[in-house]
Length: 94
Image (cartoon, rainbow, N blue to C red):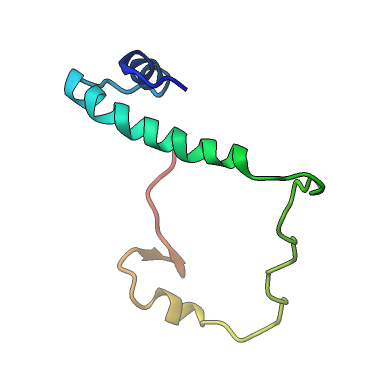
């Protein structure tokens, strides 16, 4: 892919970035290097490899629900300056 200043300006426009001329000159070789790295993926032989939309097995990573003792209301409110009638007091929502 031909990476030039026009391409950098186009990508910056799509990303809603305002780049000056110095930044455009700085990013041109960097984007070329990134695209060259990705083009190496085209060289990987994938013949006979099944398509897998999820390459990593999905499993439930949540812990089992267990009933355990929790903080008493007084302990939970102990360090709060903003409390009223046994509850945390927050800003008024209109």
